[in-house]
Structures are given as structure tokens and as C-alpha cells.
Image: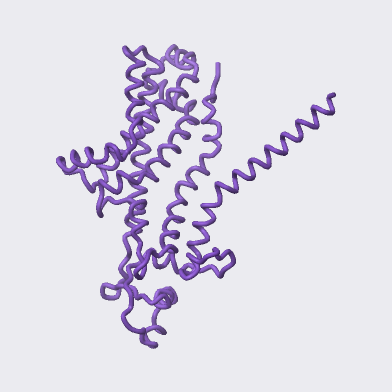
Length: 318
């Protein structure tokens, strides 16, 4: 009987492993498709059936970072020979690089990428910071109408961003916050704050109050106890909350598309606008998307230990 149970358990474990492998391959398929397209020659990006084996090249990444236009005549052989190798790749595609004097004109991608970093990091730090303080207050003190207040905070996430984008645009235009970094930062803080409060409250509730009470008896102030006792214990929750808030702010599209135009525009609405000669250049779009995936992937991977422990809501138990 025991042997039958052991055999059945082993079969279930093998099926679970197969299921995990299949799910992993399904989730990784779009990542592979983006990465492979980014390194393909443009002629192979839309072939049917798809081209799997090809000679990788970085032409799409070069085109992503420089401004270029279609050449109206064949390039002079002497000019081609004098051009650096990366510019010759642009010429091979029937385009030329725009210059201001001797300086190459950069495309809008570097500035949009930097805007994404500034806005996502700033909004994440502020949303997690304010959410931590708010969650601590709800967890440690009796607040009149606590349930109603928490529900009100949660209700800010009940509408999709596109529903409130137009009213927010009109209000932002009236106060001069359209196409500004601070405007998007405020929006992302408001959008992520409810998630931060609710997630951090779960972690704060898991930290025994006796830790703070002992610190207060030893002469610590409430603020000292918070920073020296509570925050280190809540580090797992803070890391997990930061990952989710950063991903949300990093990938947000609707507000960035409607609220910005050029100066504060982030990468998500800019990447699809990359056009080639008459048709979308899918290799350049894929290259921009691939580079855009790297920061959030690195950030999530760096905090993966905290994230795996944090989502269980069980960092500390009495």
C-alpha cells in the first residue's frame, strides 16, 4: 500500500515538473521572440514561416540610438569607405545618419529611457515610503473608521487608468503639469500608493508589537523604534512592494501617452513610434523593447529572494 502511494506521489511530482516546464516555456516565448527579432536583419523580421537560424547583428540597436533618413541616391564610395563601421551598417540599409556639424544626432530613445528611470525610481521610492508610514499607522494605532479608510484607499485602483486619463489631462493642463516629470511622478504615486499601503499593512501586522514595546521601555522614542526595529524587520515587505510598484510605473502606457508629448515622455509610448522606410521597422522596435526589459529584469532578479519570501506574507510570526 505504501509503495502504491509512493508511486502515485512520484507520478504527481513528475507531472508537476512537466507542467512547470511547459508554463515556463510559454512565458519565455515572447521574450525569446523579442530578443531574436532585435538581432535579426530587417529583411528577416517578418518572414513567413519565421526565420529561426540567422546571422545575428546589432544594426537595429545602432539605428535605435541615432536619427536617420532615407537616402535619395546611392552613397558615394569614398564617403562609404570613410564612414565608421556602424554608420556603414546604416548605409547598407539605404539610410544615412543625420548630423549637426561633425556630431551625430541622437534619437529620442536615450532621453525617453532616462525619463523612464527618473520617473519610475522616484515614484517607487515615494510610494513605498508613504505606504510604509501609512501602513504602520493603521497597524499600530486605532484609527477611527479604519475599515472605511482602507477601502477608500483601495478604491483608487478599481478604475483602469484610461478611464481617468482624460479628466486628469484636463486638470493637469489647467495647472501646467502636462509633459512634466513631476506630473507623471504624482500620477504614479497616486496609482501605486493604495497597493503599497495594503501590501505593507500585511507585513506590519506580522511584526510583533512586543519588539517595539521592548525598545520603548529601553528609552527609544516611537520614531527611533520605527527606524531601528520595525524597518529592518519589514525589509522583505518593502523589497517586494518596491518590485511591484516599480514594474507598474516602468510599464505604464496610458498616462505616459496622454500626459506627455516630448520633454517628459517615457519609453513605452515612444518605442512603437519607431518607423523605418515607409513601414514600421520591427527590428528597431524589438531592440528598444529588449533594452527596456533589462532594468526591470535586473531589479527583480536582484530582489528575487525578498520577493519570493515577501509574497507569502509570513516574514515574521509570533
